[in-house]
Image (cartoon, rainbow, N blue to C red; front, side, top):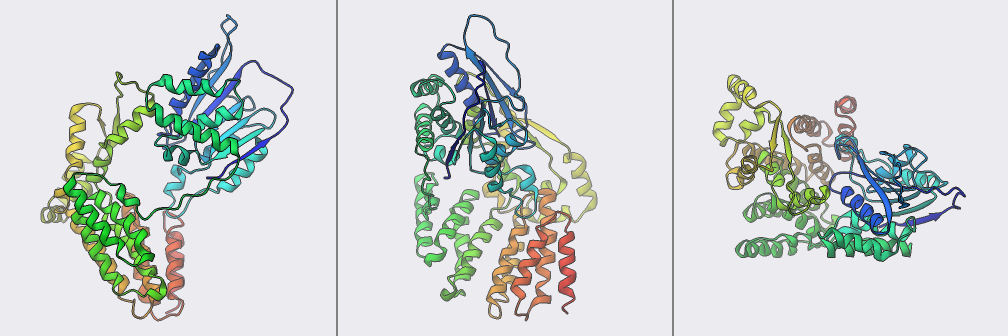
Length: 512
């Protein structure tokens, strides 16, 4: 967690109306935070108005919530509906890039604006769609915020809240209380949380964490990932007994690989079951048996990460499972500020292709359908259209719940057959060079990073993966083979079209 506070002299101008903008993406409780601020103001004898400027959350940007307040004089004030550049007293940004967007849009000015932001990242669509690391530079955003704001408070508000079992809105509210931007006592802020009546204890703990972090103005120690992170899984006693046995087995592996193995084990067991986790460990055992302790088990740690990713592939069953889990609905209700007696209507968007439908068929049947263009065309006509499932209704929810419950059937599907064959082929090819070139074997395992997502994204990744892996034959025997393999992978990650990769492959072919 990083935190800093910067104070500049306040402009002599003093507007009667206090103007607060909150920029948050889906799931961060922007609506809840706005509701608390509005409740706080009214409880302290202020006239207040809260609005929101519609965004589409993580798809195209943050929703901007806007609050204006002033002491109630008995006359009806005229409030604006949206913030204006250069006319915001408090800007609260629930993510680091939202801090940058606020500065770019002119909402943050050195003569008046208190800027409160979280240093954690929730990647934007433009960052996620980059084949490689498209993450924007947070240091540049921090530097711009230091110049733009009159008072700046930056901390990892998300971590502070999660550690207390709450969401970021609570810790941001605590930082707002400490900032002094609103003339209300801390107790009034806490009373606003209590008045909401939901998740009060956890919210108050996170509020206190945000308040105290801003007050101290010192860096909090970074939390080191615990090798016991996977033990947070829960389930029936019989399954937990199996899970503990898998954990015991994982902790008996060489220490340099334990943390990655347990993280991977947690992922594949959550994806399928403990028997699937045992298969994961069996695959790893064959890699570890051939590894070298003198190299700190780099090969095994790499295999632990990418075998888990390969085994926990994205399919319709996984998507349906995630969309019908209780915590997701709880998060959505909290974000919307829904009360217990209110119904939240939820619409899911699906666009299944013929390939996804065929992949759900039993393995042999699916292979026959995939090999028959007429049958695939029929599936395309029947299913390749946008669908909206209103999962607050029983029919749509049960449809997704049924699909998400097909875990036992999953291992008999065409998709699973294809994924297993691909995984085993990749492992065999990567380890085939181990005796001659340890570093090249590691890089070949890392090439699995090129495969991610689903639908067209997954197909493009597979194509690039095949091209890069195919270059291994051209590199074998070269002292710099591992370096060139890494360069090819990075070239593949540069652009979706693969132009950089095409140029890099031509260079490698010139070696022969």
